[in-house]
Length: 297
Image (cartoon, rainbow, N blue to C red):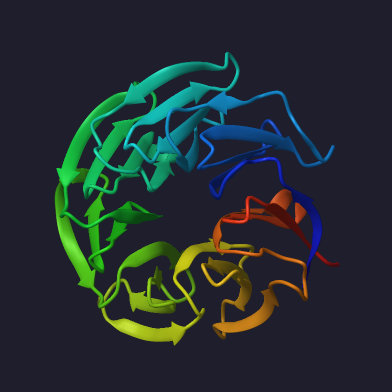
């Protein structure tokens, strides 16, 4: 069971991006106020590291052993910042609409970036070099999930594409669902792709057969994030203002974190990050709030 232990509210607009660096013990948050803020969760305070951008912040990715921070913007641009020197080391402006999602393949030094114009870019993170751009469709790319060497990409047309990182020239259509895809994750025990959609369903697709195993009405509004907490539990968040803790084996809800019972979010919960080192979840949303949830012993 989880309980709310802290709330931060210093941003001036809805929040969409959140990430945690274990190396620096820093939480990063960003949203419509065009500010990347940082937080020391142990000291429970805002830190001096602040980054101003020229567009709303949608997505973060920590790269190269947390040395670099990727910042995806609503404009379609993205920046990469060196966290030690606090200087920009890369800037890219070819995506024409919001950079909603990204995924980092550390063992291959690859960064996969998806944008609202349906374009997908693949990067070498050591050389800061663009390797390939794919125009998958005109659907917004909102989700990317890596499974071994395979990369899965979900968009607003309900399409899920995939490719192998060893041959990123060839991208295939994996499956098409009825509703826009908002988030993806991988269920190891079931070897299935977990898909959260605009219709509030959590769908499991067998990766080998490409067939739908199950589709659960999981929330009341679109599901924005699926995140593993440990081998037995994962968490989802939604526009319905609720976080749900799930039993991974039974696919049943164990706990609903909402307002007013748990003093949670007042509006849409847009994103979250699991921090296993402190047994916590941090969620952000339209209410400008950063909520820290701690697992009870």
